[in-house]
Image 1 (cartoon, rainbow, N blue to C red):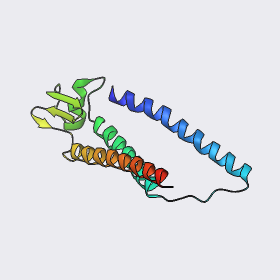
Image 2 (spheres, rainbow, N blue to C red; image 1 turned 120 degrees about the vertical axis):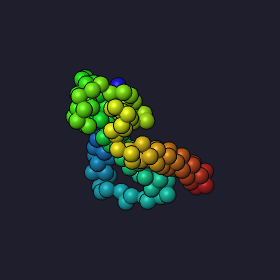
Image 3 (cartoon, helix red, strand yellow; image 1 turned 60 degrees about the horizontal axis):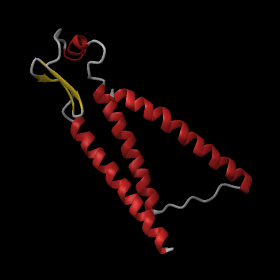
Length: 137
C-alpha cells in the first residue's frame, strides 16, 4: 500500500515539476533572457527540504524492498535464507522479522526519522523566512 502511494505521488509530482519548469523556460525566452536567480534563505531551506523529502522517500522505498508483498513465504527466503512465513512485518517503522531475527538493516528507521525531521523543519523554516521577507519588503 505504501509503495502504491509513493508511486502515485511520483506520478503526480514529477509531471507537475516538469510542467512548471517548461513554463518558466518559455517565459524566460519571451522576456529576452533567463532571470538571475535569487538565493534567499527561504529558497535554500526549500531546497534542503526537497532534498530531505527525496532522500527519505528513496530510503523508505529501499526499506520496503524487504517487505513481503505478493508471496509472504518468499520474503524470508530471499532476504534471510529461511523458508518460513514472517513472524511480523510493518511498513512504518520498516520491519521484517523471520524466526525472531530482524531482517531490515538497523539504520533504516533512524535514517527515516532524521530525514523526516529535517524535511519538516526545513519546510517550516522556508515558509517562515518567506513570510518574514514578504512582510519586510
